[in-house]
Length: 154
Image 1 (spheres, rainbow, N blue to C red):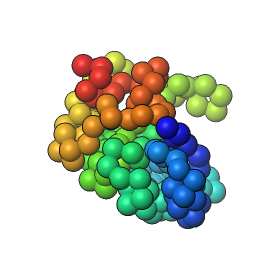
Image 2: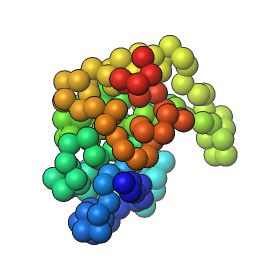
Image 3: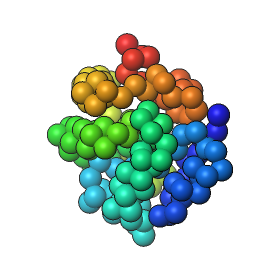
Image 4: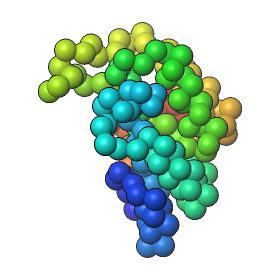
């Protein structure tokens, strides 16, 4: 199976579906529109949501993912709201702790306690939406390299 992770245009989901891609990952990157605007200038937060929704329609349950970086300045409540919004749309969040390098070198990496707390929120949101990252056939949640994945890393 083939999984694709790129910055999408409006037509990306349809094109990828037509050529037989199995799974897609279109990244929100940040938990809030304000942080997205700051971290990803020139990109369109709303368009990513539209593309994620269209992707769930095309690729189906447990086949659409989105990275969200933990530690860009969001609160736990904002991150929890983002996680729940993604899962309520049928998207599996892939939560990635900030690696503070380059322009972000002065920002602190999220603590282990914070990551454990967010992991619980993540797990509960996935369960509430009946989503299972363990069914991934490609990409991050299947790899087991970088991210904590509920159902696998407990």
